[in-house]
Length: 178
Length: 216
Image 1 (tube, helix red, strand yellow):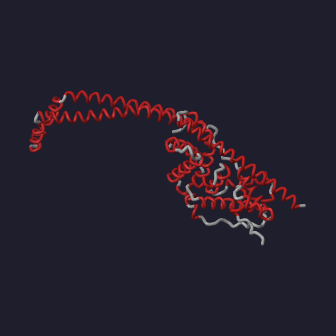
Image 2 (tube, one colour):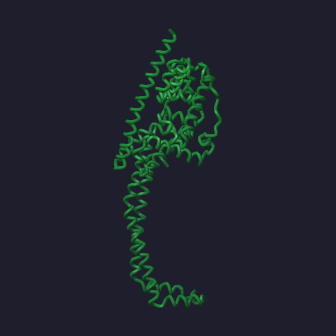
Image 3 (tube, one colour):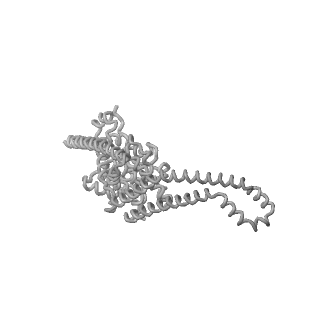
């Protein structure tokens, strides 16, 4: 009894060199399947010869420039990461310290009681608000100093980030990408 | 006499196919290890290694992107964005798996994102491949007129017809025959089941055969 002809899948497998031994015996005795295999092979070969769409000549250079810029940006960001982490930690400590100092000072000077009394007399609060704020600032001079340093530190971080961002943008613009 | 001649031609054709297959395997093994080496070098801090990958894969990625988004500017953006995404996900790139299918998978995802933002209808083809009805039936047992064409002419006509195929057919054919990905790798790149990829490729070629036959 003659073997059935190869299916489309079988022909594809043969052209892809899969399951070849099993199909070979049928092909030796079947001219029709041999012709189909040859036809499929020719079409596959023609498809392999389809060229890639031509791209702009400088595409590799432009993509490379963008990658370089991103790498530079990434390296700068990584270099800043530890600095930013330390700054954030110190800033958080300063905020905590300042909050505790303020709370202690407010308790020592009975300011909390004063504020409580003022809240029950809002008409007096309006006339004494400025004096209350100045009094608070005067009783915590250490915190004022630390706040100034914190502000300077924050400004330093921001300036550094700004310079790095501008540098990355310049490189990107030179590479021809918006 | 004619039968013997045909048999010899078949043997020759098969030998050539085997030779081409072996060459592809050797090429793939070399390229794959080379990609891995370049990636490993880049992870160790050698920026030049990534530049080599960019040089190697810019043209294939642009080609694939152009087939999908059909706009040269968008295709350039997709190419660039694909490499940037590789950089962004570098920690997750596996060195023990082929890099090329991973790269194409990212490119296809970038194309999907671009298409969804700008031209949602473009990608509906690829997203609905599963539900596509079977294309024209081709009688398998009758010799076709295009089969009589000489190789050079056949290549030229296939090239011309290929440009007019629907985008999703161009993509599977490009990945299989131009980029030489396996069915499994195509399935991974397109996020489709393996059998679906087989079906699409079969339909794409049937469509192409029908177009060639129509012309003849």
